[in-house]
Each structure stands twice: as C-alpha cells, then as structure tokens.
Image 1: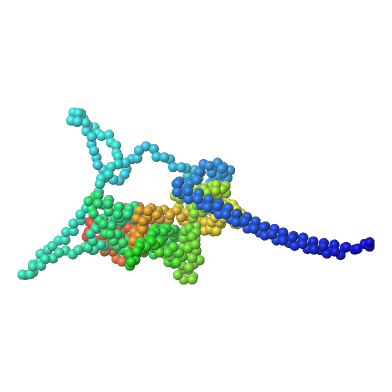
Image 2: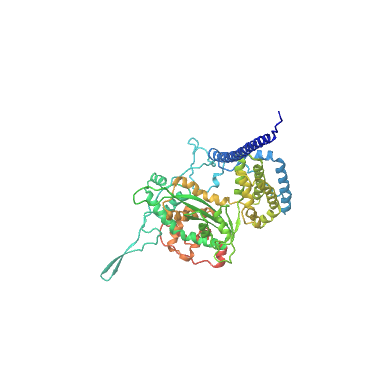
Length: 570
C-alpha cells in the first residue's frame, strides 16, 4: 500500500493542543494573579488588623495604668539610669562641663542637678505657727504651795476651736427733731451694700464662695455643714448669691485682663470642659447636659483669670487674645493655630503672638509610648528630657537674665542634640502609626515652639502652672457635677479668677472677698484695677482700718495713686 502523508493532520492536532494549553495557561495565570491579589489583599488586611491590634493594646495599657495605678507620669528612674548608663553619663558630663562655664561663682556649681530634698527630722515647731493659743497649766496639788515653782516644761499640739455663724445686728440711729410745734422722726441712712436687702452679710458670702470655688464643696453639702452649726440655708439662696457676686466682680477681672493684654510678656493658657445644665423644656422632658469650656490664662506672675466659652474653637481663642502680640504658651491644639497665623490681630500691621510649646506635653507622648510598648527609643527620650528638666530646676531661683545666660551655654546644646537625635527616627517612623510615632511626630512638628523658651529667661519651659490652675475646676466638678447655666458659668469663672489670683499673691482669700464686698459699692468705676489681688495689699493700707473692720458701714475712698506710686505698688 502506498504511504499516506499524515503531517498536516498532526500539525492541526498540535495547533489545537497548543491552543488548548495556552488557554489553560492563560486561565491558570489569571487564577494565579487573582490568587496573588487576594493574598496581597488578605495580607494587607492582616497587617492592618495587626497594627490596629497593637494600637488598641497600647491604648488599653495606658487606660489600665490610668485606672489602676497612679495617674502621675512617673517611670522607674533607677531602671532608666541602669539601662542608659552610658547615655546618662555622657549627658551629665556635657551638662557639667557647660554648666561650669556658665557659672561665674568660685563656689559649688549652682547648675548641678538639685539633690533630693532631705526628709524632715523631728517634730514640727508649732510655736512658730500663727494661730490662737490656749494654754493649759498642769499643777501638782501635792507640791503646789509647799515647793517653789520655778517654771514650766512646755509642749504643743494642734487643736481646733469651732467657729460658726454670727448675727450681724444693723442698728440705725433714730432721732427726734423738733422745729416749733413740728416733731419729726429721722433715721440714719442705710450704708451702701453690694447685696442690698440681702439675708447674708459679706463675711458669710465670702465663706460660702471660698468653700465652693476654692475647696470644691458643693452647695448641698455646704448646707449640711452650716446646718450642723445652727444655720439653715437652702441651695437656691447660696446659688443666687454666688451668681450675683461673680457677675458683679467681673469688672475687676475685666480690668485685670485688659492690663494683661497691654503689659504681659507671656500668657500661658489651657482649657478643660464642664457640664452645663440645660434650660427646662416646655414639655417637662429632661435634656442631657451641654458642654462648656473654662480657659485659664496666667499673665506672667501678675494675674490669673478664667474665661468661660461655650465652644472650644479658634473663634473663642481669638476673642480671648485679640490684640495681644507677646508670647503665648499653650499645648499644640489646632484651635491655637489661628492665633499664630494672625487671625486675632486688630490691624494688619500688628505682629501675631509667638508660640511657646510645653516640654511636659512633649515628654508625655514618650512616657505613654514607654509605658505601653517599653520601646527603647521612648525610654531614651525620657532620659534626655529628664536631663534638661534637672538643669532647669537648678536655675529656678535665678533672675531671668542669669537663667537665660545659663540656658544658652548649658541647655541649648542638650536641646540641639535632642532634635538631632529625634529627626532621623521620625523619618524612619513616618510611615507607621502608634504612640511612638506620635511622640516623635509631635516633637518634630513643635520643634520651633519647643525651642522658643531659649529666647528669654522669663519664658517657662512647661505649661504646668496652667494645668495646676485648672485643678481647682477638675477636682471641684467631681463634687458639684455641673453649672446651672452659661451665665452662672461666667460668674463662676470670675470667682475662680479672683481666688486663684489671691493664691498667687499670698492673700487670705476669704478675707479679701469680704473686704471687696464692703469696698466695692463705694469704689469709683474707673479704678477697679486697684481692687485686683495684685494691688490689693497696697490699696488696703490706704483705707481706714476702723471702717473696714466693721461688717457694714461707710467706706472712705482714698485718692488715686500717682504714676510713680502705681509703678512701685505693681
């Protein structure tokens, strides 16, 4: 049989086979690509969940510590020193060498880190305390009159003499005038009072206000305390007096704020939230409390004033600081950005304020990262910042000029070294999220503001003073829970302002308020600044002491001080 050529058929079969294989390969490739895409997506989701888990774990650790351990931002210093012994030795050597150059005294270097305060030994000397004394003499009946008494062996202890309410009787003299056959009865005019036709005298109003706004005692509890002393007062009466007093004393706070904007070098500020009781609905249905905000402002070492704002936003901040062009020390909250952009300037030619950042806020981020993650970088940051704080604490009592000089020589190199160390780590951590990345990011973003305290010795390194001033509100609101209205909150802000300023200048707060309540009805409206706590000691010595000692009566207003006298008093 002849041979038949089968190649064409084989080629066709091969082509079909190849096409089939190519189709399968394409399908497999597509499936592989789909699988790879799915794997990449699942891996990304896994990594995302893992990062979220780590973040939640960090937050949980911070919350657990805040709930179950001390809230102070403490860390085991001894462990840090062991862990970073070389870095600590290097920082101490650098600080010691630079501080030695900064010190001009031949004595011991004042810039060394202050040693821990020695624990007091022995019993307190109670005889040095300014308080009333009750003396009890113990005699020996067997020896009294038979042996010569040559003295006493004395010891002291603290006791308590219960005070309480007093009745202030206002006796207005009545006179009988006779003119011819006409007889007229005349009664002496009433003296001016801040609380006219009121039930409470100035001294009791001052006692009530100090109890609530300094010591955080709510009115219902204060009412029970007064009732135990025989005085029955309802909450509504005390609340009305508090709002009336706070609103009236607001003119003194406004005078202090106006002076601060004109003369202050640095204003330090912070804020905290408070609950405001809503107005009752017409249907009688209850509403949730609204949220308001108390801002505190520290004007150098002259004034402390609080400002109530319904909103915690840029508009509120610009309204508070409008026209001020000095330094403003605040945290890095975004609401303050408008200030430093110049939104609070009165005219376009005015200079916007300069931002000063708080090193305690910068440290807080590293502390949280160290607590939650135990990361070595966070712990090293704490060591570096602690070295700065120790140097600054050693210069606290120095004049601003000398403090500034030592900062330039001893502290500026440590600050430069800190940011030189921070920036590379921030670049490496820029793509990550978490407490550590946030801490490094905060330090880099606030670099210029954190360094600004080096510009002048009067600028503080931290904003801790503002946070301490807000403590009276933070502690008090746990007891009194909320404020009755926006008007009551603003009145409370005025009272907080004067009480905090009294503490700043070492005044007896209760006595100051009682005196102001007596003096203010007679005081000229254009001289309210003289009644501020900063100037009250100088103003009080010019008053007639006998008039001010009475619970009620006329007050003689002294002449205003001359310009040079005002400068000396301030």
